[in-house]
Image 1: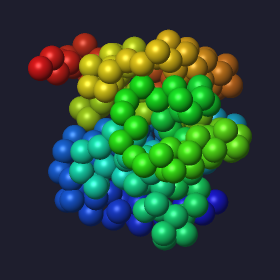
Image 2: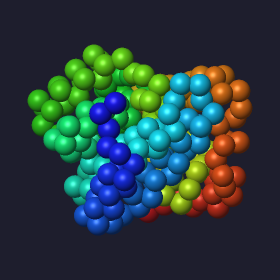
Image 3: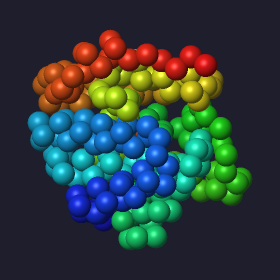
Image 4: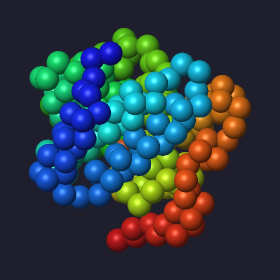
Length: 206
Ligand SMILES: [Fe+2]
């Protein structure tokens, strides 16, 4: 796969966090840890690859606050460096149900960029890594792992809930169920501190 090494990915994250020192970086680190924990017990996934892709998925956040623009910024960042599979994860992680118009936030990009994303999502069949990061994106707050449903509410409070929100939630829950069928245990049994972090988390209400 065309992805950075672990060392490169960690270095990209440190540099990116310096450029935009907000909680997104710690969210990404917990996505990476969740991905590795699941990959550790999965028959086809490589734990280091899972970790690297988890770290990579939101790298576009380094450009400052944005909505869907962050996935395109991340894609461009990794494509420019020849890491096509990390670039792909930046785009696919926001579309758990495979339907491009299901994104519930703002399309703060140009029309031709929207067209590119729509075509990409409709053309590329999701693989195990795409689905893994779509799932793990829903299991990680900046403070640690959490119940998927808590993260869903957190995202809705910050980005709003469009008409496709229930389809997106169902798709993510389906991914969770499919992974659990394959690994034979609850994903939550693999996530250290998930209970404490879920029940101490306070949603931002203003
Ligand atoms: Fe994320």
